[in-house]
Amino acid sequence: MQNASTRVFGHRGAKGYLAENTIESIEKALSFNVDGIEIDVHLCASGELVVFHDFTLDRMTNGTGEVGKQTLEALKNLTVNGGFQVPTLEDVLNLIDKKCILNIELKGKNTAIKTCEIVDDYVRNHGWKYADFIVSSFQHTELEAVFQTNKNIPIAVLTKASVTEAIELAETIEAKIIHPNYALLTRDNVKLAQNMGYMVNTWTVNDADTILRMKSYGVNGIISDVPDKI
View 1 (spheres, rainbow, N blue to C red):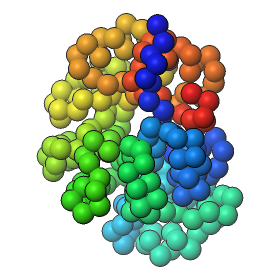
View 2 (cartoon, rainbow, N blue to C red):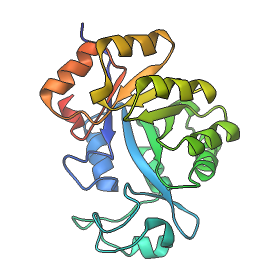
View 3 (cartoon, rainbow, N blue to C red):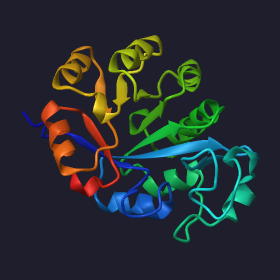
View 4 (cartoon, rainbow, N blue to C red):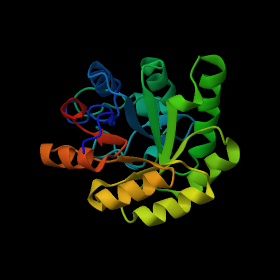
């Protein structure tokens, strides 16, 4: 049975249409009236959180080397493929302005504490709610740091290996959401996770057949490069 209320998340904005993790890509996703947007963050050398997927600059910009070794000023002077700029987490928050959920994936090391500080600031001073956020990661230490820092922030465990292992980790940090790769999912393990109280948001689902299959499994959310196709 198809889940009529499947939430749609734009992956790195609308990665299928515009350069990932840019303001323009996120604007495109917002134009599709998505329920959420997923982005990635790294801590740069001057201490700000920048929205960027890779650990190195080479694939997506005219620069080279590690993202974490560059200052914000240096990163802002680079050109992202297509003529765009690397945004900060605050740039993205100010653009979204509570229009949808923001899923912040912690990519680099030491991203948890700064992310918690910024989330807390936007909840206290900018009218956001903790429910407007999801903080996800493959990195167990970063998720544990979020849990230790602010238990109000919704946590999602990312996995491309095992739904069972994701649930086992989620139990230790009181996460209520798991983000498994779609190739791991069956109708039974989706139902099992949901019966245990977990929301299941799956990634990265782009083709029509897989979209239909994930909906038929009753997943709570689908993360897609082409969110308008969900």
